[in-house]
Amino acid sequence: MRYFRRLGPLLLLALASHSWAQNAAPAAGSAAGVVIARDFMFAPLTVTIPAGTTLTWTNRDDEPHTVVSDTGLFRSGALDTNESFSFKFEKPGTYHYACSIHPRMVGTIVVQ
Image (tube, rainbow, N blue to C red; front, side, top):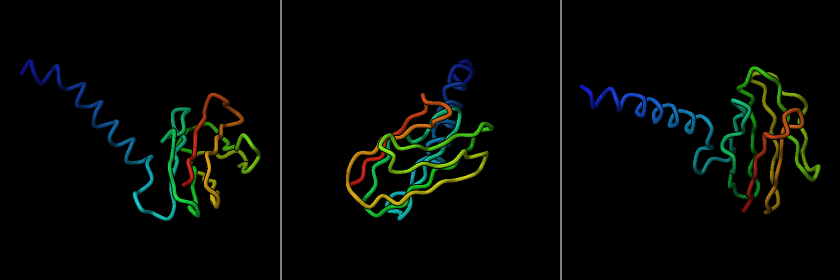
């Protein structure tokens, strides 16, 4: 029983992490990827997608967030809870972005 008491919090953390990753990661081989804004973070932090893929960011926080390319390639308006923004990446390259409201929220898109 002591073993389970010590293992319990780790198991809960592992299950929560697994659930978070499943909700945040794009499906392999899908034509569209998904990034989630939650807990003042973008997840996944880095996404690798093929050229021609449409990526969608969805805000799961109670605070508004934006998605702004550091080169000006794309820019969303303020996204309220459960609102989304999509952009189609046509050319290979590495693209960095942030939330203009919360600049510590950053992410990277690698297009192959």
